[in-house]
Image 1 (tube, rainbow, N blue to C red):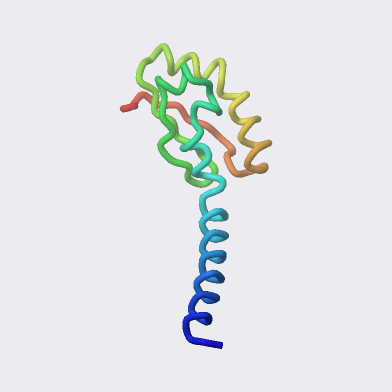
Image 2: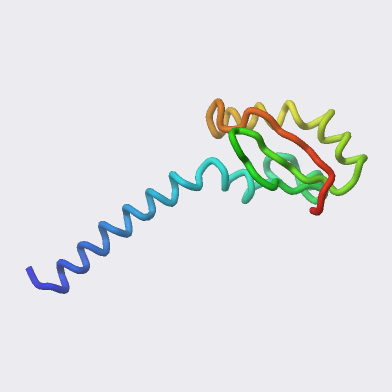
Length: 102
């Protein structure tokens, strides 16, 4: 085999490995951030922003006390159920809404 053919093969293999690493590393956390409107609905998403997931705890900033109350009372349980079904049990075990910059 020629050097350029070996290099091309190695490039293909490394590309596939990096794709798999990227998908595995991002799958749980990044879908929550990338697809926030899908998880909570467009209107609620305009007033909230997921900040981080640490030890299964999702922190979400909300821009107004009314939305804070509404998200805690109306969306929290359903959101946890959706996340559990989509990401696997234990990926997100709690959601904490806090007033913050959206």
